Length: 281
Ligand SMILES: Nc1ncnc2c1ncn2[C@@H]1O[C@H](COP(=O)(O)OP(=O)(O)OP(=O)(O)O)[C@@H](O)[C@H]1O
Ligand SMILES: [Mg+2]
Image (cartoon, rainbow, N blue to C red; front, side, top):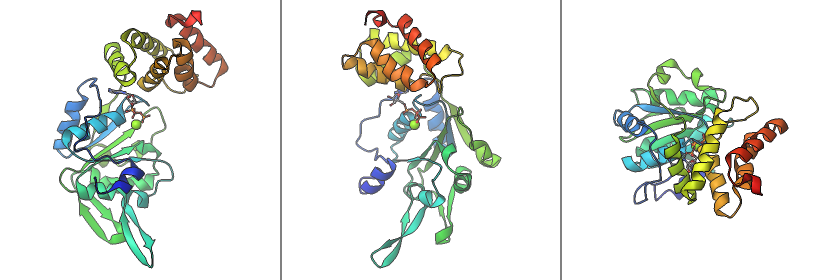
């Protein structure tokens, strides 16, 4: 919210009023499913590989629904107190300071727990009563249980390619979460995304997308992840800076995908085949 710049800076919270809609290009029926689930007070889990648009999607949905968005990037040191709140010393006084989850519950914001699998299991336990029909947040330290304000929504994301703690969430919670699976868009849609995000021309976007799709079809164990829309956009942005396609693709696509020398070499050979200017520089 506008009067909470600290939270906004610390946790990536964005006030959604009077802000342009974050650019999100629908790939399937994900927007319809999200909004229906939200209206029904159902929690959501977004599953998908890195760089496929999960975060951007939530930003756009929060905007459309007119709710503030509180984003928490989960990590393995994240404690329940980081989410819920803690007593802090202010001068001579001990004061309670809400964590981002508690703020979202009080304000009726959409709370997005990014990469929830990274959070320790004892941290995610606090989500159980929030994720189901109770929509309550127990705050042990305060001895209170908060009812979520109208408008509150819980959204978590995880990448199924990484080891998953989500399966250790109670089944009662899991089953109250509506799942949206994110894959990669069709070539046509991805081209449009690359153009919008980088400002590159259509022909360049088409070449990069064609290369991306070819890399996704590779069945090699040496790649850390598939080539995401994000890396294609990064390559396109380098092209906008005047780099050749080959240099841009090496730096932004091949480089991040592997540390393996042999795999790197075959990726670079692929670039030569797929990118028209590749053999000229
Ligand atoms: N459908 C889409 N519409 C608009 N932009 C998209 C879309 N998909 C991907 N992007 C672009 O790709 C970038 C990466 O997307 P985003 O950060 O949302 O991925 P993510 O799925 O949250 O990844 P991670 O799991 O690594 O957090 C965005 O900054 C945006 O530029
Ligand atoms: Mg993300």
